[in-house]
Length: 196
Image (cartoon, rainbow, N blue to C red; front, top):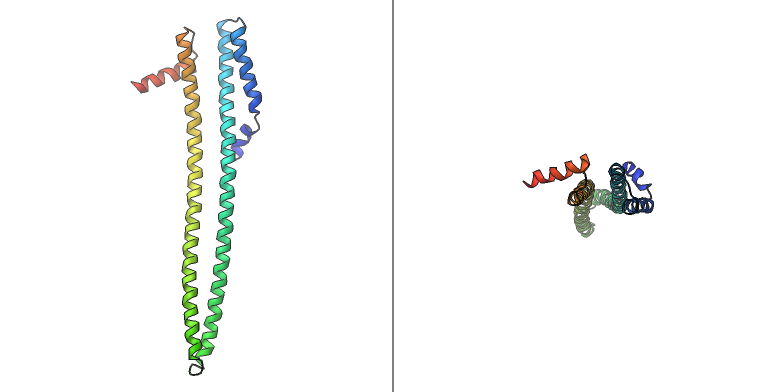
C-alpha cells in the first residue's frame, strides 16, 4: 500500500489539464522539431503518470474491499472458534457428570443414555464447526492468492498500456513523416520483430 501512496496523491484532473494544454500548444503554436519532440515526451510522461495514478486508485479500492472481506472472515472464524470452545467446555462438563453418574449406574441408567445421545450430538456439532473453520481458512487463502494475482495483472496491464500508447504514437508519427524518439523506435521495432 505504501508503494501506491505517491500515485494516490497525484491530481488526475490537473494531469489531464496539463496534457490537454500541451496537445493544444503542439496544434496551435509554430515550433521547431526539437521543441515539439520535447513536448511529446512530456505528454508521454504525463500520460504514464496519469495511467499509474488511475491504476493506483483502482488498486486501492480493490485493496479496501479485500481487507473488508478478510476482516469479515476473521470475525467469523473468531466466532466459530469461540463457539467451538464453548462446545468443548460442555463436553468436559458432561464427561465429569458422566463419571459421577457411573457410581450410581443402577439408579440413573436412563440419564446415562440421555447424556450419551447429547455427547453424540455435540460431537457432530464439533465436526460441523471444524469443517466450517477449514472452509473459512481456505477462503482466506484464496483471497490472499487473488489479491496477489490482481496486483500482478495490474502491473502487467500498466506496462502493456504504456507500450501500446508509445507504439501508436510512433505509428502516427511515421505516417506523418515525423522523427521518432529512441523510446518510440524501440517500442515500434520491438513489436515488429515480435510479429515477425
